Length: 326
Image (cartoon, rainbow, N blue to C red; front, side):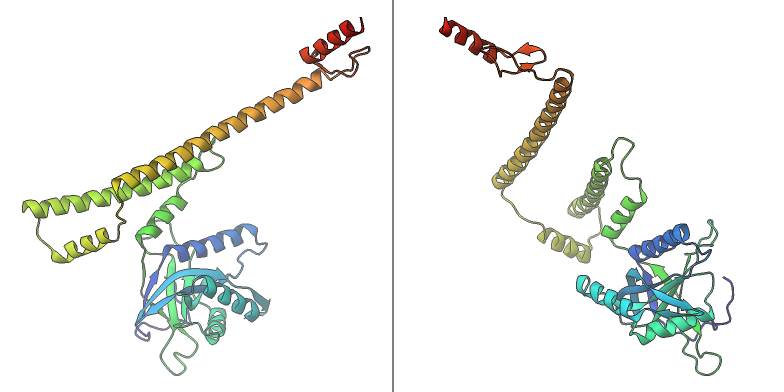
């Protein structure tokens, strides 16, 4: 990692443990990609806020949003926009609070120190600074994210400087499934609505759940057979998991399944019927365009023709009227 004049040596930090979640990583990467493709500037300054929770000395960064700033030689954050967005996110995600901010670059700069002071002054919790380095080599083993905080060393050496913190990636089962679905291509050339991709994601999730259940069943069978070591902690967790599952009578389950199946079939039939009616309507419009309706002179005047052939009802009425006059 390149050195910076605003970064002090290790040992001057508060000992925070930082955990990055996939959503925050995706948001920062997406912010950089969009700015790179749409901005006129070569290397625009990107600034955003980090959201998460702090439990003791552990900080989890789970979300983020972008910030607006004014660049008049010195960057100044739009405090009104910052406050509004923070309140909006707090209403949707009440368990998440501002834990810091992020930017893009290879090393921290004096400009980052000034921005950090503004964010911290706006009540940013632990005041974490995440720096995303998009120029990291593709074969690098380390994450392209470096985490800093304000140095605790007092005096000229530590005043207005950063110190690096350890960072790790934390993710849950639901996050892994979501990220896996995002990274895969959704739909094919003939799947404009994305239904195939959505069904594939559901199938993968069900398959993953099935594999986990198979592992639990094998372990319980091994405990019963005496081939597996008894672990009461694992057994309690399995019992608690099973207790959360809904219990349903077989008869009620079959009735509900039958109702759902009939609803799906009915929807499918209605969709097919609508498509046939639409095709028939298109055919009728084309037919009338080639054979426009014409009127007939005489006693049967006013009856329409369909494709040059008089309708049987109209023709029959005309003949009956002529026989009546006779």
